Length: 117
Image (cartoon, rainbow, N blue to C red; front, side, top):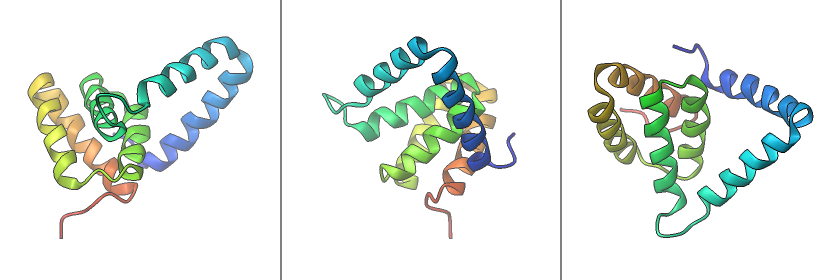
């Protein structure tokens, strides 16, 4: 588990900027794929971001948790929506994904997502 998902996003973000200078073609291709993927279509950006977070949980990717939690909060994902996504991720990934789902909720809350009162 990461101590601070904000710190994780910052550290990995800095490394990705470095990659942009060292392997620009790869990063340009990845960034273009991201832009195309997140454009509204049959699914809106919020739904796509929830899918990305579920995959990050299933893959147990700490950087994914940080970046996608931040994006979910920015896109106005409610706690109820986030929790339903966590259910699907845990169902598809079993116990290890359930543990990572708890970490994803910590990241969501750290970036300003709704907390239980």
